[in-house]
Amino acid sequence: MFKVLEQSQISPPPGSVPTTTLPLTFFDMPWLRCFPMQRLFFYEFPHSTLHFSQTTLPQLKTSLSLTLRHFFPLAAKLLCPPSPHKPYILYTDGDSIELTVVESTCDVHQFTGNHAVDVRELQHLVPRLPPSRLSSDGTRVLPLLAVQVAIFPFSGVCIGVEFSHVAADGKALVHFMKSWASVCRTNEYVDKWLPSFGRDQIEDPQGLESILLKDWWDWSSTREEDKGPINEGLTDKVRATYLLGKAQIERLKNWVSSHCMNNNEVRLSTFAVTCALIWVCVVKSQESEVGNLHNDDELCYFNFVADCRNRYEFSIPATYFGNCLAICVVTLKMSDIMGEDGIVAATKAIGNKVRELESGALRGADKWLSGWKEIFESGHVVTVAGSPRLRVYETDFGWGKPTKIEVANIDVARGFYLADSRDEEGGIEFGVAISKAQMNVFNSFFEEALRLL
Figure (cartoon, rainbow, N blue to C red):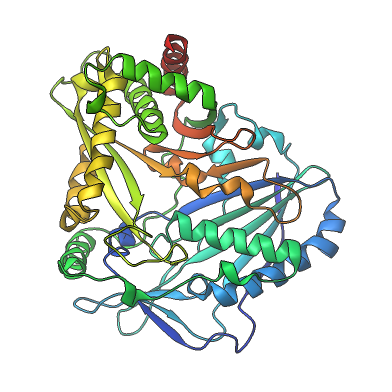
């Protein structure tokens, strides 16, 4: 189904970037234990493999090299020395990323539709970061980005990336992808896309770096460093995409509002009501496999992140490249989630957590790692990746807007992703990855919820 056409190394232009060391900030520390992030961008491409190889691929390579000049940390390496030394990112001239080009005989539409698809099929389109290596002094050296381009002759192209979250959060990665796409499309780099790397812009009066670094060392000492193939345990898992139009979202807000005794109790944002609906449907689908054996007092967790760029308590620009996310955890009892007013309860809880950010995004930041470890091991956690604000469908390499975007790492992350709608301003697209049996139940609960609106 997939044939490797070539593999190459892509570097910034020789001599264009000096040797540079980037320290990690406390915003980066929580992601040292994270699985790689994976994004897929599908496009229409009605041309042959020969045309792609002779015309399109050289332009993709050249524009990627030029873009990496400005986003050099992605071509760099993460160095993790033994404790007590701090990990850091190091770029040296000649550092490169691995680019793989494959040809597929599959029907591209099996990947770009909204129907349920076996997650293992989609993983064929995801590149793999080269393995880490251990230097003689005990320092582990890890690459940070890999790219794969898949050509579906006369029908489509898929650009897949796998990257370390330590190097970039979602906004930073989309910044890179849109910049690469712009250079590929126009053959020039626009100054407004220039990223900022100033780590000195991130102040740490609470000493969070040392706290989170110690938590990472403690956690790492009890686990293997390399996590193995990401597709382990994906048997029987499927993923599907759903759309919520602007009118449906407004009806959902009105429905939640009508079920609140006091409308001042709840923040009826698109994010809160959408995530509440999905969270409740996911939990109900998961609990369907254990029947009615759940404990009503058991705690369910919903994890999301909040971008701290341009927030009043920081002086971090929108173009900052790295991690700049506050980690937020919402907690509800199982009985609240499973109850008749589960969506209302979830909306209130998510809205309240968003409101708490207004009094300081770093409240509880000292527990970002230790608390997450405890929550994740509980098994009742749902996470959300992506954001409609990233506007990923504006990533145009010259072939028009993407036909589909996928956040493939939700296959192992117990969660779902959110994106802007491709075709409707104000609409939402989301994807869910769960077992086949759970997906049938999820569909049932989701459709039932929409009928109530």
